[in-house]
Length: 120
Image (cartoon, helix red, strand yellow):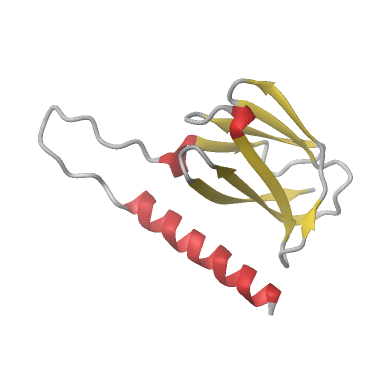
């Protein structure tokens, strides 16, 4: 049951991200459009072998909570290191080869996002 709930949450988040990526804000000329927070997070290298760097354009790295989940939704314990104000390194060297989900949560902005990466 827990697995089904997690799969549904991941699917809903993916659909939300797709909807946000496809929508273009309309507004009067000269007004700055709202920043798309989903696109302000970048994972690299992908596929990864030893680590994944998470670039957070709009969030301070110290305020963000990261969790790594395997493809069936189980949370895994990984080491994280804050490299600078907007960059976090996640050690994935000890993970088995496969796809993983990186969940990012920022309480200040109420942002929640899930990103997929491949560990080789």
